[in-house]
Length: 623
Image 1 (cartoon, rainbow, N blue to C red):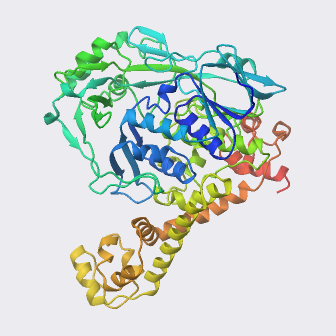
Image 2: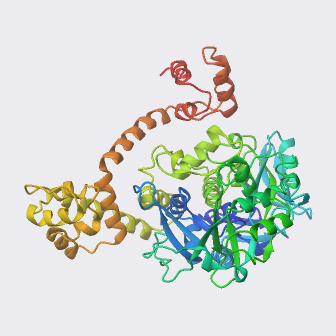
């Protein structure tokens, strides 16, 4: 049946698996994507949205590297918002509401268009291991499929257990069976495993809701998109979301079911995502608050199904229903299905290298929730990196590793590998030390040249990026070199409530004022002449504005990043004996031995390793 050996087998077809399979095949490697259900490729298991704070930056980075999440999101979007526009550009984060069915369909169409990618519907129950190297997978029907590398992206399916009140049953997602066999084999091979939980809210019938009692949440008047390519376009029409609130009455009704809640009666012992708690957890932890926001999100263009964001719960279905009917606008609500919690196996990611290859088994890669993360975007980025590195390993090429100052993806992977996680890991802008460098607007400038080197994207994409860089630098220099007429400028400054100028000066200087924006500076005659003679896209002008206003911050972060690179360049041998260095603290010896950092910089980020430990380490390494 399978008479060929694949280069790469990807297990699981969620966000991580889809990106891993796509990039592996697009790089020229024969790839097999094995999933338990071909109908749910790229399924949005939780909310029908992509991006958001820090997550939107990740989607843009994936797109810049030749991944498909941005394209799929754009093609299935029903609403677009750029979040945090009242703050600096380091915080701007794109987000789309998506049509759940179209999203999955678009992923399937994108994957089926890749010539070197094959598909197979079956449950993988085990790995084929020879001499500590993975050489294939074994399915529940006993079929053995050989490969040179395997990427596991099992999501919440590994021994998944669904909880609704006092009921529980096996499953990786509502209506789908759990995956069994892999965890036991990996533990027998020496891997450490753990349990995590996540949850989802009820899905309801939008026809039963009274939207006139809720606050409309429209998309941006001027929309953008995720993908830098010309394969997608921004939205011309959008669907509104809505917002309503819980109340003390709702909270009291929910509390009546706490004794039947698996969260509070001890049936669920694993940790859930701290930053996306269930409604019962919010009521318990924030007892002083008399209401919580609920975002009412349509599941698509035409369906009446609605996602009740903010009401994630594992309470009994009768308690969920009774409480939700007390929410304003939900008085006549009809359920499509109740919310539930799900427990699943994961493997602490300190057992991985920065390539996402396991330290124990050669050629075996983990990506997504199997590594303890939560979120579509975090999973997709790991799948992309695992797929790239699996191919490069097969070809005996240097691994592809992004540094913390190069991408949010680099921060994500480094945090997982270096610090590990005991609760579902979610990306935030605050996790990145260099977030002024890692903006959503410049992901293509940062990463597309790297993707061209990897052979993932075409030279055409590189030409577009080079033009963006060149033209934005030229205009910045124009602003530095060109003087304005102070009388003309004062007309603008008075209108903006900014201090007037007394003499002619450079455009750059006045444009750097916080009150003066790009729209304002376009009214100045010299700028109008420049734009008339130079056909510049909006993304180029955005680069110019960011560079002018944040030049000092950007320069400072680049300087700090350069200092970090000095320690990144100090490599630590893979078999280094940390326990022999008695002048290291006991905790440092234990942590360094367990994690085996590849560089002194990585060692410095390990919890429990102090600056004095790093000094000792540098001395022992002859530095």
